[in-house]
Image (cartoon, rainbow, N blue to C red; front, top):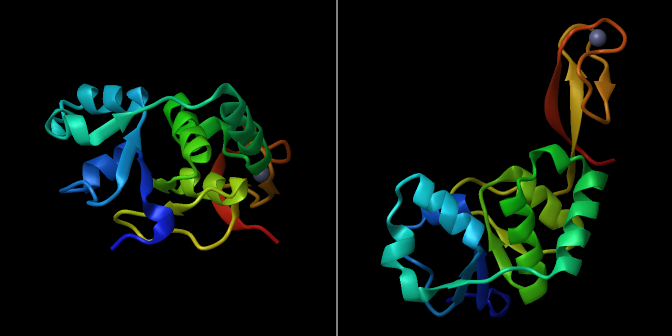
Length: 162
Ligand SMILES: [Zn+2]
């Protein structure tokens, strides 16, 4: 039985790949961007589930909120247009987002959007992307081409918000 807040679900590409069947007793939404990704991978689920899957697009105002949120949490560079649309759609519909993508889960937490992982264990609390220098170990809040101190490459890392 889905909990009351899960009568509406928004599924991302990872969720559609992981599921064997669509959750029963729920309205299941996705965006046309996700269907395009599935088609690109030659996946036939979208066709099989055709009528059960509602395809919808988010409002411009929600999309704007998502993009603003992404620039605050540091998820901007990772957020594809499709990802942003899914978050915005979940916001519009007050739906639960089904996703295994940490970046999407992170932003959903920040934006107050309900989410649930499909396969992997979801993150419990808000984390922020940071970039750690592989040379001197200094941590930066934003992505840089290389370390301003020693010139080594930076590696992205998710760290807990303090
Ligand atoms: Zn360095």
